[in-house]
Amino acid sequence: MIDEINELFTKKYSEKLFIDLSEGDSQLESAFIIPTNNSTTVYQNFLMQLCKITIERINTKLISKKIPDKELKDEQGKTYGSRIQLKILLTKLGFIAADKLDEILKKIYNSRNKLAGHKASLQEYNKVWARDKDFKADFISDSKSLINDLVNSLGELIEEVKQIDDCNK
Image 1 (cartoon, rainbow, N blue to C red):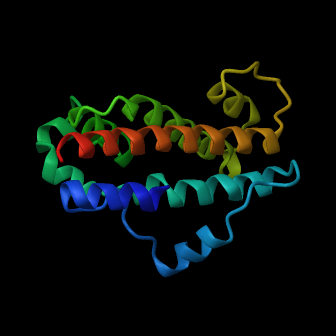
Image 2: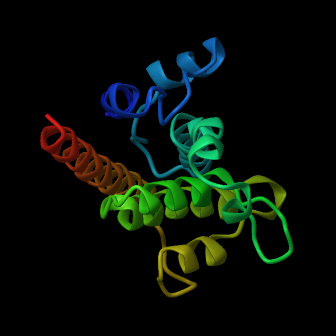
Image 3: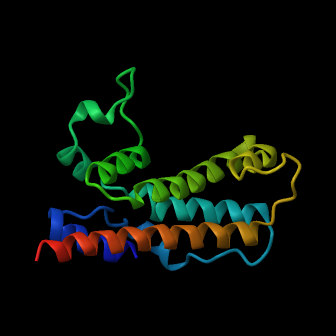
């Protein structure tokens, strides 16, 4: 789906919305699978790979060409991260799918961060999912949910870009 979005954005805006993966990251993408067991380590790896093939590929150079620099900074003058920059761009371009895509990318990013490293916290992870802090997470179901929501939001964005493209013919 990212390839399809890139193709549409290249036609419309002369650049890809998501940059190409490095050779090493391409191997991650080809080996990407939904966890088949409820292991925290397997799920952490899944989340890391999912971030690599989505959030970490956002083309911030394209965004900075389309959006004035001051709009990409917070009140303290610090540049927003790529996920928020993407939401700003898509909103500015009039895509309704911007909010839904941002919500799922945020959930993916925050899920990874709450389960990462030595500070891994299932209680904090459950907050990201709006669950009781002591809920016993099912990482297989969670991974399927993330993929389903991501596919749906990317699909909505693709349809919107196609509609705009059809209107300009």
